Amino acid sequence: MSKNYSAIVHSLTPFNEKFELDENALRLHLRRLRDAGVSVYLGAAGAAEGYTLTRDERNRILQIAVEELKGKVPVRAAGVEPKDAAEMASYLRDAEKIGVDASQIYSLDMGHGLIPNRKELEAYFRTAIEATSLPVIISNQKKVGYGLPLDLVEQLAARYSNFVGFAYDVGDTFYMIELIQRLGERLEIHCSGTENALFTLGMGGNGYQGLEGNIAPKLAATVVSAFVAKDPDLMHESFRKLMQLRAILRGPVRSNQRAAKALLNAYGLSGGTIRPPRLPVSREELADVIKAVRALNIPEMAGWRLQSQSMAA
Image 1 (spheres, rainbow, N blue to C red):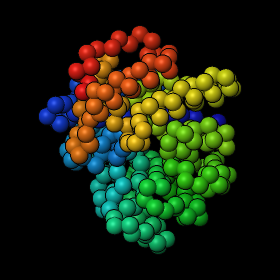
Image 2 (image 1 turned 180 degrees about the vertical axis):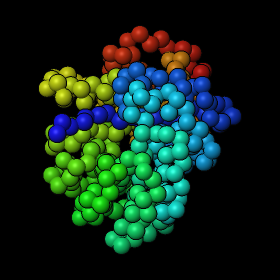
Image 3 (image 1 turned 180 degrees about the horizontal axis):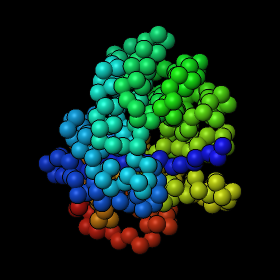
């Protein structure tokens, strides 16, 4: 069986100056991702500011993505960590009606540091998976404070044919190794986070999910395409630049990509504004980001022309 390799970008969500969804900016941004050939996830908690989205906004974003991407590159609903199975099931039913190619099922986050036991996890995932006929990808983020038992993942994979993938935020490299060994022939396995892309590919996984492709989607795709083409020099050079871009965007306080939208805006692209409670970077911070990114000499940015920085403040 041939392996399906992919670089997945969690798309940002452009908002206008009134913090409303900017549909035209979203379409323009998605077209950049489409033209680069990356898979696209919508509405994620981090890159897409998913926790600020209403149900109507979330569904409208998915509708626009289907219109712009479906049949060209894989388009998938990402979502956020739910508090219960009913919340996740409702999200999946909406996504299926809209017509995305697949959807993530995030790990259960019951709040206040509560950790679900194995029976609770099994009941949650069975309820969620059975709520849809969509292909689903389970996402296990270390932010929820626990890993999913591998025997439970195996049981779910054996039971449900529409459970097709697993995204792991690699908190334990040995877990990822065993996951790939036990389920790599049955599931598409991606690491959640660019930093583990080469490790995951090298161990037999399918690729990675990241945020940096919002800025440089062709660079993000090249990490995987160069691996498939057995071009180690290009793969390592692309990965090096991508990780340097990641560090620049996160900044010295390691906040979640606060500079990404401002950087796109500075070059006249469709970043949009950040929605509260997040706050935008300062002009001084943006100037430092622009200087550092320009020094990377990312090939697809060669033709970009810097606009007035007042657009990106």
